[in-house]
Length: 88
Image (tube, rainbow, N blue to C red; front, side, top):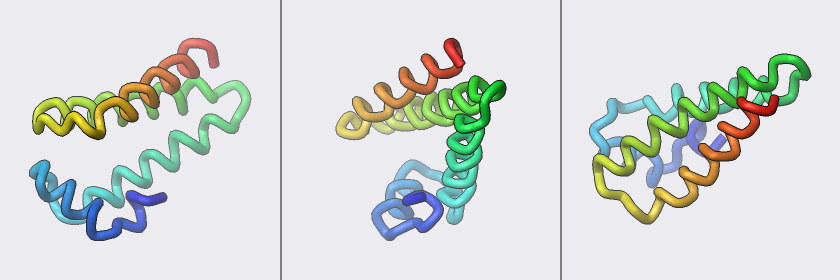
């Protein structure tokens, strides 16, 4: 929900990475949708796939901009989302 609310630090990060204003809300909405799908038996793997795709895009952004401090958390979350997608 942090991305949806978009405190200044989040907005500044997205601007630094070259994304248009307001994209944080779209990303937050996609994250919320993926998270909601994780709660539905039978299609939770869809939420895992969605979450993994979102996180892989985030990882690519972090690597491209050499933002190493945020990378470990994104990698761990992507691995968890991938595991849910495979095992869900």
